Length: 482
Ligand SMILES: [Ca+2]
Image 1 (cartoon, rainbow, N blue to C red):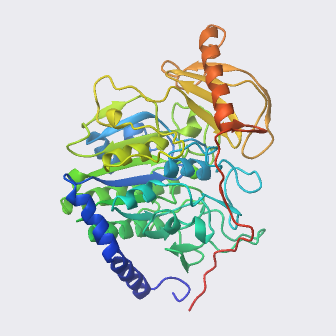
Image 2: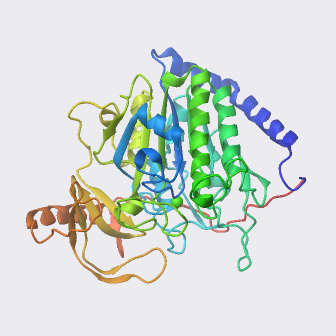
Image 3: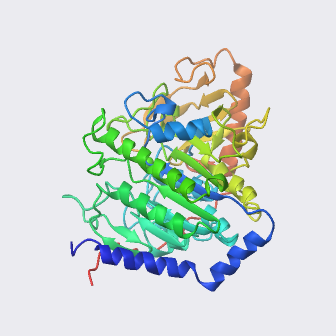
């Protein structure tokens, strides 16, 4: 136990955190929010790691029991064309935090051109970017992140420097700890900026994130709060706590999904118990599609994690806010994780940053089920690392003709042809209808060229990219027992 966190340490740290939230500056900011008329809503984003499009009941899973998420969908709205901006963790997360495409904020690749950050990378999300947490904190929100960050493991890149009052979680993927063939540090579990356990005990991560999040919700029930809960699961190596292990019909992967369902139910129950259900907007989604190796499923979608097929980037999404969001609805308009920042900004009584380009749009009319509301995106871009591979506009998705189609791992695919799919009729991207729709192809190619100019492409800088954060001599995050 001495190597890990003791119960006493945990309580002590939680107590200090509660005290820090009660600082006079924080209280004053909170009063600013409440004195301006109606109180802004709380926000909770539950963000799974590698959960597939069809891994929960309300999105078609018949293997996983997810009664809490199914009920959440009945009490809210399901988005069925909801996108992340990358098929892998780091770039996808950079978009959720900043409301921008990964290339915009230069988080589309790591310091050596690989698709995600690794421990002790020089790169991280630039602290000058304005995250959702920065924006809401400025509005007087209490902000906390519980889970996997993956936007830089150096101190200046951690959640605590990116708008979060409090952090509890692992700084990168759970398969990036010390192994036989690497010199990486044992997988660190952090509270704020301090490693409190290494290697992190993964079986209980979902449970501990949940308990800590509920503690934070309870402590901040009387003021607006923003909780970002990026689960470590069901990313490989998949773990679940004792109560769930061996209980599902789909091995450890199903166990982990069912534990996430439990976790979501616990959080919704806490909101209800505290009487703040009606002033809390909760989003449930995933950072990218399921891998084809570990038990997850993307159902009718083609492809998987790490690709620009729908299976890599279209995610299950449920949004619930009793009394404000209609119950039991489905929205098939194109929406993205980038849209959460501008939408939350509006709901919190402020606006997104105006001194820089923000790619996300306010999708409140879609969330609110406004009759006739349409996607605010004339086009959506599918990048893989630094390469633009596809573009969607309305029901049409065009895969670009590529001499060498990049993959995250392994050699590029040579001579990938131009392909056009009607996603309304062909969600599985099976029937290439490019030949029959030359005008559509032309229109989507023009969007692609617009993206190349703005955001860049392989071997081409975009005119409106911003620099990532950079540290010349990064240090490993190590556990130092006192
Ligand atoms: Ca992921």
